Length: 96
Length: 211
Image (tube, rainbow over all chains, first blue to last red; front, side):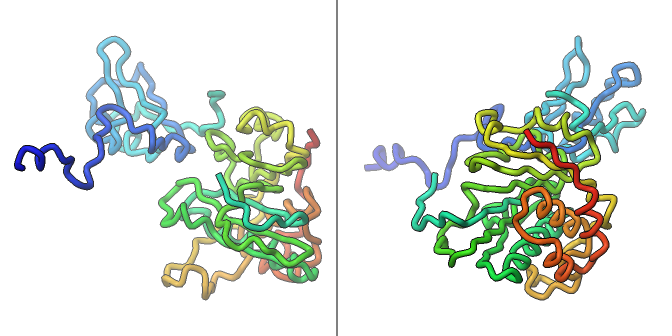
């Protein structure tokens, strides 16, 4: 009996999105896109820590980049940047 | 997608897209003004917000709806406009990344609140297979014609609205819709809106591009 009980999935548990949640794409909430100036950026990763949706990616080769599929354009990265390297550009200035 | 309980052949449906909280009141004003103007002209109307979108959060895409028909409307149990005749965007960036033309009827009219070149915004319209159904795209710089009005925070959800209807951006947008599509008359909008000057200016300033 106990074994059968353990096989039953616990109620109200949904699979955790390990990387992306396709059911909640928030990129179209954004009307100002964060753009990082690679020359000013010191790669201190303050924006990486502060981003509420974990949309800031870092790699040693390319530095800071943003996951624009989920970035809501809240502007926290731009506000916390100590050197002012992240600017916010209107979304319609970009083609894609 | 939808269970059409009743088919109102002559009903015209208006969908107003907007940004949550910051411009929600303006879109509601546009939908309400159009519906009330239709009522003044002896037509039947409905006007409501999208329940699915609520509670809205700041800058989230949300919708308001209006339905106008010369015959009694029998569509009661559809809480969204699945087949819009007129699509209004209260903020220009909504044209990108949202399926604003989903399910639209032939001869659809799109009105965008923008000061950008309207011809550059046409390429963003989606879904692409519905772009051929669009009759005209209109641009109105409504932000320049009326100040934005925040909706009241008394918790009445618009039942008692002391900011008046059509005091801000929504008035100019309603006039732009009226001119681009001919759904209601200018005189009825001027009678109803609080900011009558913005209505007249919106009527004069709208640019319509026929596709």
